[in-house]
Image (cartoon, rainbow over all chains, first blue to last red; front, side):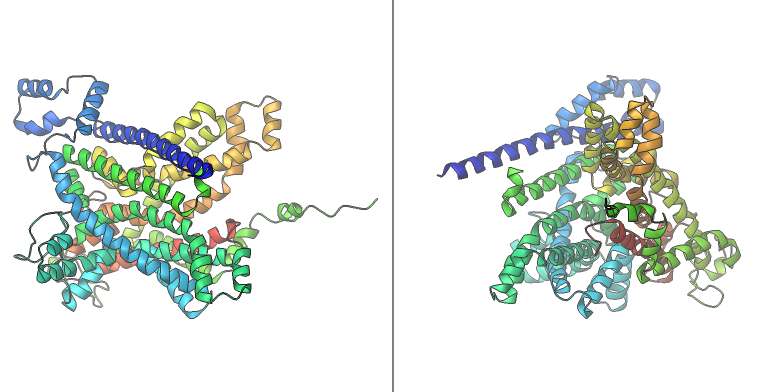
Length: 345
Length: 292
């Protein structure tokens, strides 16, 4: 093992360690925001649980049982300790553990988000690359007009229009839900597509896929537009650099210059933008799940807010923020694989 | 003795203040965007003159009537004229831009200015607060705030304002860090000008340029997100004519009455497109890396 390589590895681990410390600090902040925001509310959980029927005595007794008579800081510390053990209390509507509700809904959102991100990446990056090859050309103009429309489109409207066209008018695709009645695969992962594949049933898989197409296309639109735009811009900026001119002057084939010398060096900002789409996707999932009646985490959050089911709101909010922060960390760490200069910076 | 060539920055300094804006407006996309945004602003003022019906008037005989000469955009489930409701919805959208974008600008500027100018522990505290707020996907943070304050149009606008605050805070802080090291700020310090006065009179006005660009860029997003919260039932409540709430109505009837959802969505799309066209041109103009 060369000393240089060893020191690189040590630096990488130090960097990962420092990022994990930062992650812990941010998570403490996130838990504080969620907890204290929920405590701005008039009334408390005891009042919500008892409703109008509770007497003052019953209310006082329940507050004592739930620890609501304690100072707010003590309540927060108890909340953090319980949350670290996955205990967020009981849902006021389903009567199940709040975390169970959240973890049941999460795979639906995960499947939708991953499908949309895959679509956005696999269409957005090639579209940006092709658009950059001839700036101002027909394809470039078409792609840039589409991306401008894409970032300006409210996805809850786009979803409805797609439903109207492909669901109601043409009748090509289903208008909502995860699968047809009687076609639900046995629950293993909670992701209908994977569960159908695991069940080994092509008809169930096809049905799950048909149900996923419209929501995934709806959710992918805005990220796709951003990814195509940034890919085009970065490709154009990198193409003017000296090393690319040298590669061309050496007489390398054009495809090789574009893929190895331009795209590879333009990848970091592209990966950053792809990573940053997660926030957009998780936010968009709330709206997409509402339009397509999908039982995901976003829909669960909105329903819980409307029914004032705060244990579920707290559990869902912390869970989503945790996933978001963790993925951002992974995206940051992936740069070090793409560009070793970063960890030495 | 020969005269030295004038410093290149002198040309820029002697340029009229509106020259960059004029350059932006030479671009066709920016002109189109400006035309759309001006049209939107005219509608918000002129909607009582242009709308054929009161947006709240129910005429059950016309319930779910398709677009026609009587109802240009059709009628909803209570027979209310969709065209009039879409026109009046422009007012809510403008209000959202003013309140939510304004709140974000105000809070973000205050945080960024104080953090960037004072530095040290205050800056560290402000930036950690910003990091925590950025650790939430934007709509989730808005949902939590609306959950705490209760669903209403005002609360949804406050929520969106808070969601956008960190971006302004970061931008202003960066500007302030650059401006506070300039000679005139050091001179003001040297002559004993109070810190608050330096911040407000010398640092803030000179850090504000990019913030205006950002406010324009965000205006479209603010319209979409406030409408999104209303669509989810967490913003404007029935029967107020809000584009998001109209879309939510349309969602319930989209199989039988496509027009209820189509036209408010088209209105959101046009306004956001207008702001994005202007925002793109402004960004190209003010971002030195993009200027060619």
